[in-house]
Each structure stands twice: as structure tokens, then as C-alpha cells.
Length: 189
Image 1 (cartoon, rainbow, N blue to C red):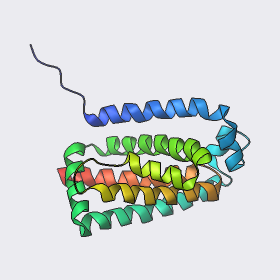
Image 2 (cartoon, rainbow, N blue to C red):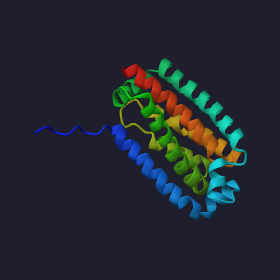
Image 3 (spheres, one colour):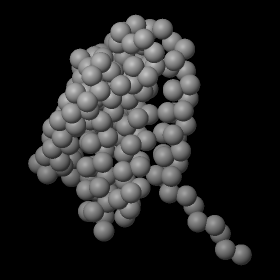
């Protein structure tokens, strides 16, 4: 009798991100603090921000800058190269469509959680530090990745506050994750 194939850890991650997104979107409309923090009349306005097109463009610009900096870290630091090798083994030969789906799910879930829910209650610094801690890889020498993520969290939190909504941060986070996952999958081939 053949053993069924084990699902990829990325499949589990995709389901976790999707579940987090659904849960957060169910809770968010019932909380006053996030709406008040961003001056939004309803959860839809909180997601889109004051000027959706401007937020999208600013988010993509920030995402491009963060993605370029991340690729520079991989190229110019030993810990970045080590992290890239580890993540390449996990990502494997991820199909580009799967990479984009995972990038979208993770960006949406993490931004709703860290910027939409945590930032209004804990503030910019604490929510950014929590974001960094969530990206901690418990292997020797990879702690700078957590610091990098905390710095990126500050930028994502700032753009969320500046645009009055999550769209800019979601699009920036999507750009970073999409570039990273597509390049990691390409390196793994």
C-alpha cells in the first residue's frame, strides 16, 4: 500500500494565511480602535485607505525598494546567502502561480494582523517589533533577518498610517514576497 504524499509545508502555510485572513476580516469590522486610528468609516475604507490608487502606487514603490534591499542582503551578506539557501530548499521548485498566490495570501494576512489589528492597539514600534519576532528563524546566525523584518515593519506601518489604510502596505508586502519567492524558486531549479 502506497503512502499518500505529504503536503508541502507551503500548503500548510497557505492554509494558515488564508485562515488568518478570514478570521481577521471577520473581526476587523467589529472593532472601533482600528477604524478610529485610520479615520475610516468602515472596514472597506480601512482596507483601501484615503486614496486607493495613490496607496497602491506608493506601496509598490516601497515594495520595490524593500525587495531590492533584500536581494542586496542576499548578495552581500553571509547570513543573507545562508538564509537564501535554507529558504530555497523549502520553496523548492514552486510554480510561479503558486509563488504569487502564497505572496498574496501572506501579505494580506500579515498586514491585516500586524498593521490593521496590532498597530492601532500597540503602536508603530511594538507592532514592528512583533513583526520582526514573527520572522525570527531559530538557527544560529540568522537573527539579523528578524531585525531586517522589524525595520521593514516600521516602513510598512508608516505607509499604512500615511495613507490611512492597508492597501499600500499589502501591495508593498506582496511585491517583496513575490520577488523573493519567484527568485528563490528560480534558484532552486
